[in-house]
Amino acid sequence: MLDKPESGIPAQPKRRTSAGYTQREETLLFHLKRAMDVWQSRMKRADSEVSDTMREKVWELLVLCGESIEMGCTDPPRDAYRLSSEIGRSLVVKMEQREAIQYYRDELLRCVLTELQSYPDAAPCVMLFFYAIGDAIWESYAEILRVNLRQEKRRRLSEQLKVAKRIQQHLLPKSIPQIPGFEFAGRLLPAEEVGGDYWSIKWYEQDGIVTMKLADITGHGLAAGTLVAAVKFISGGFYRGASSPEDVMERTNKVLVMETPSDILVTMIYGWLYPATREIRMVNAGHFPVFIARENGFTDIPPTGTLLGLTELPYEEITERIDPGDILVFTSDGVIEAGIDRPFGVDRLKEVVWSNRHKSAEDIANAVIDTVLSYEVAVSDDLSVVVTKGVEI
Image (cartoon, rainbow, N blue to C red; front, side, top):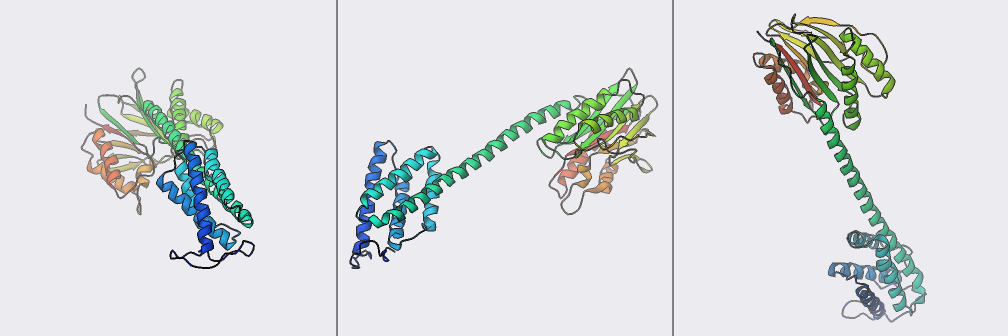
């Protein structure tokens, strides 16, 4: 406590009072108390009333200042920084930074120096102490500003994601084709506000062709969501004038190679279904898993070309039939990779499809998503599934 006077400060007898302070310490505290009273009066005239809580903190600061004077400290005690930071955080909602410094450092400092004129050697210590107070107040304001900026950034990003999500939802099919001999269903559950998956089923009745696709863009969020729109319009736009699914895929790939960043890649399964013959011609650009569930087991559809956006290489087609009872399944890798310690996996996916094979395409798609969500998993990637089921006419 205030019991080690600096040699340069006029000494006072070391007689303890009943309160435990020496006479010199009581004199110093008396002057600091008067300084605080004067400061409060000036604050009141400036229409800046000091609350009881704030008054206690300021007085505690002045007591620490007095201890620093008595100790001849070159550095203010750590508690001074703590109290000043608390004061700064309390003032953020009441006044600007410059006002806080003006009233809680400069004005208070003037009052203290005026009252301690009989302690001339204390001035350097007081100045150092109050500059430290100012630094702590500035830092508390800066921290609040950083927090507010982060919150504002998150708010704006959230708003952008919501807009992008509405756009992405608008890109998905508004309705599913109703074609004798087939049932179609699609589901997409993004891991974030915006996902990197996209699926489509479209019936070109005049051509007798149903186009279907499922694309999975690396990552999710705004970047992946933006590329989703590009994949939709690029691949969809190339249907007209194309001679085959592989023609559409190669044209789409060429554009993505030229126009998209090299670190963003796309896997996609794309097919033309001919309901009249039940044949489907498919091109698989590095997508997995794709399979057909039949009465005698499963037929996997392997990749027939590289990922989109990587390099320009030719693609090949696979032709299959979708007979009554057959179930063609496209899913994104988010389905099979879901899991904490163990991935959901292809085998478990096929079990879900097999156990629901007598249900409608919509029920099968729902069963896949619901089973993944009930698995021991926090979903970290987009979940997409497209189901095409052959039925009797």
